[in-house]
Image 1 (cartoon, rainbow, N blue to C red):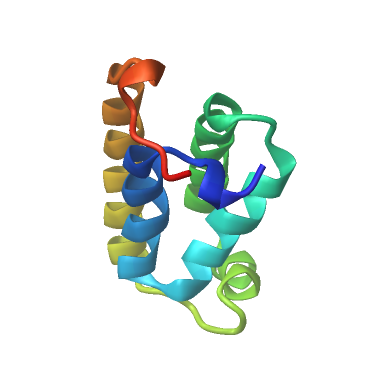
Image 2 (tube, rainbow, N blue to C red):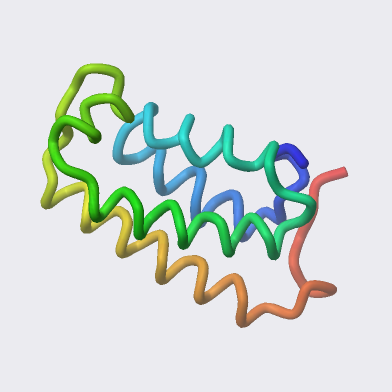
Length: 101
């Protein structure tokens, strides 16, 4: 799938929230979509990615952020908001989510 296949709610809650923090974080969440068959799998994988990001040391984060070490506190706050956003998306029945076609 592509990020264009995400509901507006999922796209705003993950991709836009990541972009507010750093474009490199957006790229990580965006590229991940190509490994997913649908939005539910994407939401699951996003949570796994968040867990992995939170457990990375500075060297690993430097690789993710293309040579820059992000502010860890701000990163964790952003990841926390994305987790909350995922929870909110999951509360919306699939048939009531909005999609751009």
